Image (cartoon, rainbow, N blue to C red; front, top):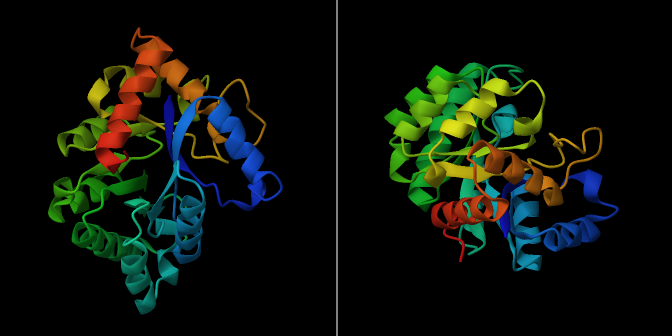
Length: 255
């Protein structure tokens, strides 16, 4: 059984067939899903979805693109949402200097605030980082994020970032990018990641894996990521599914 640790099940692209899409994933062996908050509205939607399905869990938080929209009421609402037993993580949070939809200065300030809130709530953090490796690692160290742990989601950084993340005790989560033809370096990093720090995800509806490129991504396709990892580690699909699911249950305290 597989656990897709990063989905966006509330995305409008699923509005016409959300329940059927979830059913397809369950039929494909997906045991559980974590659906991710990227701002206040999507965090609320994630919790609502988790409440409707016993096998769906939620994260809450604000993506670096969206931190410019945070106002004083948001953190209070996140504290309220965190009382829900289905909320298992805080994120996705981090830094993204590629698009700079929010200014780098504001991203750094809000990143620190959100790590502090995650520590208060005792929730592991889900990290998004792009072209911001040094600042991401420095802030995680300075804010003692290793005390709550977390995951670098959709890992696509270099070997130095992978080692820095592992040194903090964080997990690395791999997505459909691992199946892309030009992902040779990423596959080497995945091959060298210890089995007890591996997670899998789709980041659906984005980043559809081979052989479904060109289609909308969905959680049923997380098996393609697991198959790629099985090949890299010379393991069976069942072994990879078991190890990554055990890791997800440990990090997110999923029963």
